[in-house]
Image (cartoon, rainbow, N blue to C red; front, side, top):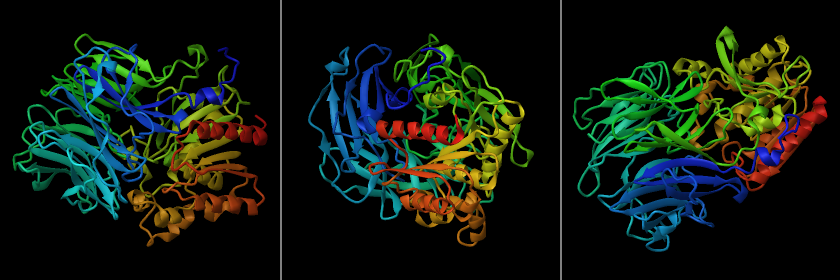
Length: 637
């Protein structure tokens, strides 16, 4: 591809499956693929570890669609275990919301095609108005343990693997939310995370430990780390995991950073955590979905994905407190798993798209298998530059700046990206949607506004009480920094974002004079409506981001783009899924109508089969192409 040729939307989006949750099972590697060309259907694939050239076997072919809807964001729809040479799979099928089971043998063969199913898939649970997910297999008792969300509450439940169309047995009733189960190797102890409204799990959560009786019931349930909502300091815990010696490891952020700590004997009534690896770096991320993993036991040491100033690296951590960096070229890492000197993760960097990273920790060698073949020549890729600037309140704030191919000058259009969450982060890996813009002469700045992850708890807490102010000021300041350094044209500055990023986009258009056009995907336009209409998981999220509802209603009104729509003076394009349960379609309708009444150019594109986040490749491509056309029309780009 020449440097002058714009990257087509059909190449930037829609051709690459989203890989997730790789897992090592003996000599085998299993992972999930979310396929945009199949309308976002997710399936499970398997091949032998270290043989990327082998054709993988699809274990869950269409029409099976692996998807959990617990807390609506789901995660961890598939649970897999290798027991006495048999691969056991338990999954949630989005077609009926039920739990299904299938067992496979033939893992002593050399190719995926040697695997064969012992029986057809068996439905374990009867259809009901509930959501299941986030489970573990308990091989000692031949059951699945996981979370069910039903009738406005979470429960831990047990489902036998040898019964059909059963009702899950409740084994524990948390006060509010629960997830991230971890079962000890001997099956005698279970750990998990709980949190209660108004806290989100990354604000304040608790690590809970319980013993399992021979029959599988839970006893001696108690909190052993983290904090309860009533405590003065909020502490977040992340990803409990058991080591082979029976000790328990978890990440928590009481130091101001998500760092790992270990309890050598969690069954003891004397809780004494060892903080062996203190660092001003993060070993966790906000728990929006089940199944997130940043640490794993590799057979000798803990392998940890560590975020330092917005970039990820791998470190091996010894139980003596030692730490060493694992050399490999990828700085965007997720979904880490390890076993017996091997490791796998989803990895990318500035010039390589995301794919399966396989590491042999003994030899120090690695292989990376991208999810799709390279879409661009390396010399045509705009590599993100770390940009630090004075943001809201004069605080140092970070962004990744991607100059237009060929270089930036004072006439270059600029697209400001406000990420979702708002607790997420602007990641470092190759993003072809960004390259779509840079290949057309645009600069792009992806802002880690105050509240973003990857820079410690203090940075993350900047947004507490400040949503709609801190993020807005930071996005505006990033644009102004590039204008002041002659890298952007002040008359051609656009901003885009989805969900919480859509709120930031609209608030930037309302409360600053920097931007000349905006694009919003399933955007929060009325925080008051979000506080009263959204789903259970985020029902009290704004208590922390803005203020208690309804006691501090005036703050909601002050921050509301819908309430200040008359202050928007530039064109806006909206994209909305009609099955969205997080931001209801009425929000977008009301915001667009308010702008129309003010004679502001508006476009609204709705998608009947999409929810909160677009999964279908045709929809993703349409959104990108429509946004570019809209900006070109109104900004003369």
